[in-house]
Length: 415
Image 1 (cartoon, rainbow, N blue to C red):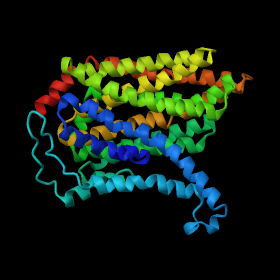
Image 2 (cartoon, rainbow, N blue to C red):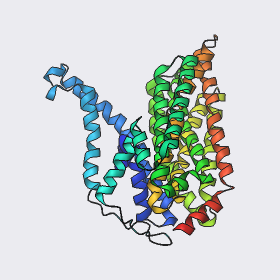
Image 3 (cartoon, rainbow, N blue to C red):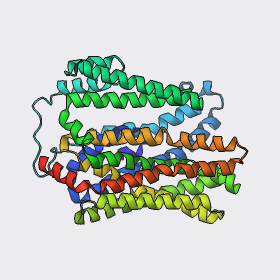
Image 4 (cartoon, helix red, strand yellow):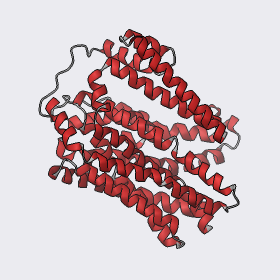
């Protein structure tokens, strides 16, 4: 239910994932994760549908915003009403009892002696401050990092700044690269502070080859979403269809097939995991590979029916990889670090996929169009170039197959 509010999904998933792992045994965890993520599709689809109805009704009832309750405009009322269920669900979630951490693992993990409310508040404050320039230096010094950590942090900041200036000079998109640069700096500084504050958590995440490959492979899932993002304008330009027709077909069809793919991927991953430690990775590779193939068919066919079938297939096959991906990140961490491992997975995939995906395809498309190619063909070529990232992600997951047995055994020894 909580995941049905799309705006809260990213921040809630690490905590939700950790809780779900303690509520349910290993044999069904991926299925449970997939069901949780169904809220993404249901909440997003209903949010757009109900939001449009609220907006139209509000504007027709109060054409003059000054006469509306509290002077709210239609879009303001829409955001408030669509977001209201999130508040209600939060109250419901507050009544849940937190299970014993790691109760389904080999050994029940003991609660650290310093895990008091005061200590937790201090860690949250330090985590937030560590992402702010200069404040991060203070946190590093406090945690015993010394001048070496501060010097490394300064070097990282300078490198990011230089790369951002170069990218801005090449593309002219100043705001894009400022945003990406800030994100990179926050992630790198958070990583530095984590290495000083909790060495075991740092090593669990950054010295696990399977997890590192998963972060790259997970970005391919986000790029799948990027391809579907450009589907509506592509159908408009390539086939001359109306946006309403394409939006209705892909919106409703994508929601149904996305839910189908999520549940199917979760169940299949759990079944294969009982037979092999590599089972979840197999589902990810198969799902992403099928999604890339469907995307290629979409961009190469001139038949609108085949194009629709291919586009909807991307939703289903891409969704099959979502549950196993997050579940694998949680599998490869000790119980107390699961939330952090999932959080870094979300940060990495969002930064690589969401922040760069739509922009890169649009940039390539504009560059091609500037040579005189028509807009439909330029977008098609841009989307084809966008498929290179999922291919890289699949290769990373194939490499992860070499390490997952060893990494899983290492984690089992620690729990």
